[in-house]
Length: 603
Ligand code: M6R
Image 1 (spheres, helix red, strand yellow):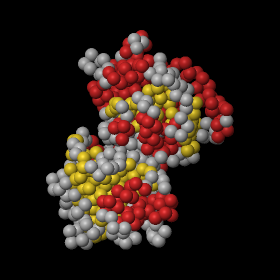
Image 2 (cartoon, rainbow, N blue to C red; image 1 turned 135 degrees about the vertical axis):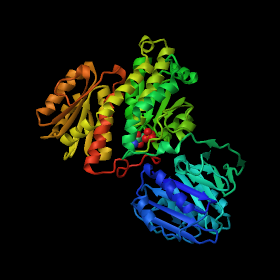
Image 3 (cartoon, rainbow, N blue to C red; image 1 turned 60 degrees about the horizontal axis):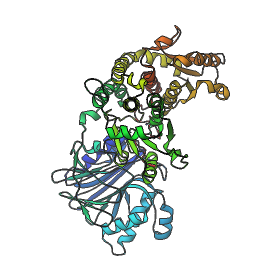
Image 4 (cartoon, protein in one colour; image 1 turned 30 degrees about the vertical axis):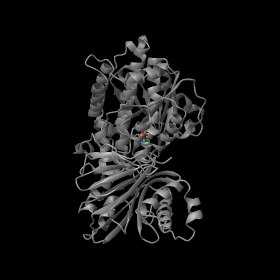
């Protein structure tokens, strides 16, 4: 989703903004722009539809500045176009604004305050920059006008504003959308994500919702809603620039698939001790043990990981688990149990749909844990507890290593709670050992890349659609495998419960339709094979991914056996590679699929 960068106090603002925007490309966007101003008040606004590379082509050598803001836009209000790209300018050309988020009451604002204003595009952001002009014209200072505008606006936002009449300050505020201040020597920066400015500084200050921050070259000032100045310690970002480079890999997705064995080993190190006992905050364990039901709230890939988590947690802890889509739960909350415990599962920790549920559960005083890769993210800050995934930055839009990391961390959590409850099945489950076996098995699957690439050529070259089917955890994996395939290759793919296919969807099977069967569970293997026969006799081109102990000679991919509760950690791997190669063979951008954003910060 939209990304924001800003800098004040360095000669080469343009270059720094562009580098920052490039680092934010992974979030997904359709247009981009920068505004820079020099000390002599020469100023430049450059915008472009398309990629940062397209924007760069329009930046001529004189576009230089010591202060500037930049933006990547993922369209919500108004189609992707140069006119709708940020930064936006007020009617009197005094104010320049970039925005991430959605203003819910922009039409009412236009009607009430901006009847005599002209609008160049269709964005809600143009309403805000003109609202600030409107208040400034009543005699308010820029800061007061911005504060006043914030009291009128409803919605999610991260704003960075420059007043051209005083290019010594960037005014910054946020609500629900992420934004950080980065501290430098005689310069300061702003960014949606620390990664964007890591080559300038690794000291960052968080901003809370409702605060207004003035950022100048030599100082920042944070004010709360009442106008009191607040001092907040900076923190050091635990990120290394090399973590966010793809090195010799052609795409981040391939690197991140390959990272998975290392991530498994890192998780074992982080959450277990030398003798393999789980090491997880005891308060979390006690709270979960005392609960009568766990609610896992998540979206997309994290939601799919949540289903696998449910299977493991229920087995280990005997506590019932419900898995809900955040975007549904928030507006149709089911009847809750007496002592619920909420787990928010989110790679980024910034997903707006999940956050709106957390706001509600917090208001109800219900205990919560965020399991995330985003240290210091919004969901992490606002939940009672956090467990980090330690997966390292995931840049490709298609989530891979975060999915397997989520399952591994939930398995360790389940083990810790199960042991606390004295459940024998948990006591007998040596998770650390099983995860280390998984890491080794992952390596063997990754080594088979080229075999998978050849199979993909045979099965997916010209297909319009495809199905993944399985039962139990194999169904959960099928949902995730289908999401992976469709989101990057644009093949219409669905994950189905194998037994459910015959109740309607089997009508879609035609001559040559690829159907991938996932078979890792002894109890359901025969039934899934039966369902594969049903589709085969209707023309399907079957592709079976099976565990060695359940495999037949004719199966296309055979995976080494692993602990029955953790099979999704290995069966998902070939499906990630299938999606990767199908996309590559179709000539699409693996890392930046159309219409998608990495961090979905609007509801
Ligand atoms: O950051 P989150 O895990 O909360 O994101 C949720 C989904 O947007 C995300 O998992 C999405 O489905 C994946 N990028 C798909 O690969």
